[in-house]
Image 1 (cartoon, rainbow, N blue to C red):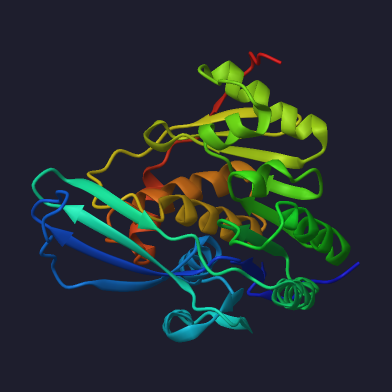
Image 2 (tube, rainbow, N blue to C red):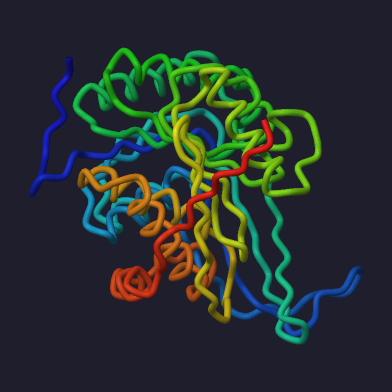
Length: 326
């Protein structure tokens, strides 16, 4: 069995981002078609699910290594921004440029417009190099977080290959993805964090009630896909489901600046809590606190550790749910 190194009693975390992005955030008075939209100065952040998780976990004091492919001028900027966040980097050089994502906040309505590109097509050899780096990094990690979309050229069962590598390395996999990348995963996931929409995609039916959502989460566990399911409910909080328990967590109300990256902050804090050996319930409470703190920041900027700790103190213990529709 592989032994994970510890720093001050904390096991290390590795993140995998197959489709990183240079996140650009700006604001405009009004967004309308045809007209030129005069925007403010732009903010640039390294993005993509796993990279966001790595940056946020580092702010919370974790030892983190980020594995990701990158290419072109945008890939160089993303790499520099990850390094500036004091995250250890394992980069695979690719032949195509890393994608950009563009967010515009409309001041007149407080609406947010997000434009997300598909990303570069990864060659088979480039995919293999990502898995090789992950295999080496996972061998000494306590947790691996695979998060975000799969870029063009990557097969839908890619995350199952990631899950198998984590099982072989004795590292616990936390998975946060959607679409075919999620629906083609069958086993070896420790914790999966779907939204209700993503959970609906997994089971192929509407999930209008809490009982139906709990039943669907148990279905994933019964299939052997994951040991733990955390269903993110946005402003309604979250559900924690294992084979033996069902818990409901309340959200912490705040006036949001931006919802971008809140889910990644939640995953990051859950991973950090678990890396300290905290219980699932305490770790999910920490995740909700981090997601709340992230709502106060622009774009995919990292949230403040002080804000996370403040909201964690305000968070409530979960409610046990006994009735489950199965």
